[in-house]
Structures are given as structure tokens and as C-alpha cells.
Image 1 (cartoon, rainbow, N blue to C red):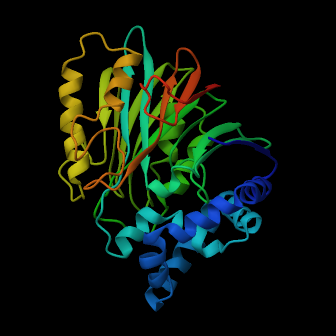
Image 2: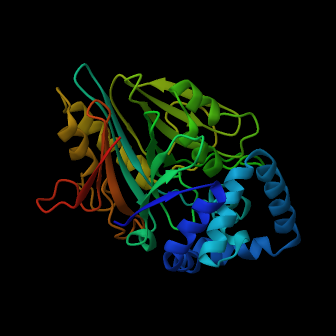
Length: 344
């Protein structure tokens, strides 16, 4: 897994990242079928142009720095800014264009007297298996941060941490009442500027948000973990004590209209069985759950075998008490596991 260190202004880090990963970014845009077959045809319609204009004006006003990052990536990689902006609003555009498929990720949180751990499977399209990367970013007057990133995406929509001791990971969820508003990827990007859990929660719950995510947020300084379910008009903060599992549908906010796929429902049931068997959970318990492949159709550690079309791109383990992030880019309990360790 390639790692890149970048520093400078928002525009400069965008240009540097775009230039370094230009091949991966161009290939990712071309091979993303949702972008090519649904989002861009919609974008070329009269309705699509209106939606794009409203979203761009809103984000340019509220998040000019993040727009500068995307403009820098587009310049550095020599790709269309419009395509990058749209793909960074993929959760919203899926609903605007009638998509109903529920995608990936699994998260296990553990908070006991002895352990404060967040484990996460970053599940995504197989096209990103070899092209995702880790970036270490230093912007003047902002907390430096480290992020697992998809090519062409703003940092934040997967997992990472900043030097204020805030770490987080994100699970895709699908509320039905998506609207014109702040995109979830822009909210996630803002988490790298958070200095406490309360600050982080405020950043992801502004009134005019467009859709929703499920956020698991930890704080080294506070020795806390919270799970935050967010929809366009609701949010629920749950303090983690014990062990907790999340997939890709809402568990705490009910009732509401949402898309909950067979994979997510199957993984939640399987994880529940594994959680009940844990009498003294620790790091190995978290990795055992995230590595589970008992269900041949919808395993927790995913391999894009039909009927599931999603793969686990990487597994991460935040050990808050040890101030360490471990990223596995193969099955995390294989004897020949591949991993990198990053001090937090």
C-alpha cells in the first residue's frame, strides 16, 4: 500500500496528490460504472445541471478549502473537476439517479477497563483494491492527519486520524430522504479538523446535511469511543461501553425508510453470534470478527464473490491506549499477513 506525505495549502496538497496518483485517479473514474453509466448521463440533463449547480454553490460557500483540494486534485491528475465533485457526492447522486444498492464496511468497537479499540473493514469496489493509498497531510494552522484514501476522493470517507488524537472510520448507510444539502464526504473531511469528540459530532451534524453516514469516532485524549448514526434530519450518539458491531444499516435510529441489503443484515446477525461468544474480548476478538468468512454468500471479510460484489480493501485497527494504527491489506489473521503500523 503506497504512502505519500504532502504539505502546503489545500490547493497545493490537492495538486501534489493528484499528480502523484494521476494514473490511479484516471483509471478509477473510468472504471466506476455508477459514475459513467448513471451519474454523468444525469449530469448532462437539464435537471442534472440544476442539481450540480445548487450543490456546487453550497459547497463552495461552506467548504471553499475542500473545493480547492478537489480543484487541485483535478489539476494535478489532469481530470475533470466536475467528475471529481460528483464522485465525492456519490451517496447523494445514487439517490438522485435511482440507485438502491447498499454497499460496504464493518466496524467493531471495544471499550473496557483494559482496551479501547476500533477495528474496521474498509469494503469497496474491487477496482480500488490496488489503487487506494495512505496520505499524511500537513496544512498550516490545521491539525496534521493521516488518511486511507480512494483515488480522487477527499480524505475522510474511509478511516484516519489527526494529531489532536481524533480517529474515526465510516460505514455506508442509505437513508431514503436524501436532499440537496451538505454532502457526507465533505462532512467526513471536516473530521480531520476536530479537536474533541464533541467537536467532531458538531461537525457531522449541521442542520442542512444532504444524506447520512454511520461514524465511529475515538479520542485518545478522552479515552472514549462513540458511534454516531446520521440521517438528513436525525442523529443519534451512542457512547461505546463493551463491544459493538456496525454494518450498513441503521440500528439506533428507528423507524425510518432506508435501504438495508442482504449482506448488511447477514453480517449483523453473524457478528451478533460472535459477540455473544466473547466473555473477555480483546484485540484478537476484534480481528476474529472482522476476519470471519463463515457465510459463503455474505461474509464479514468480503472477497467480491457472487452474490456479493464488494471486497474488503483493507482492515484497520486503532489501538487508542497504545496510540497506534495498524492497517492490514490482506486477511488480518493470515499467517502471512501484510500490514503497516503508524504511530498516532
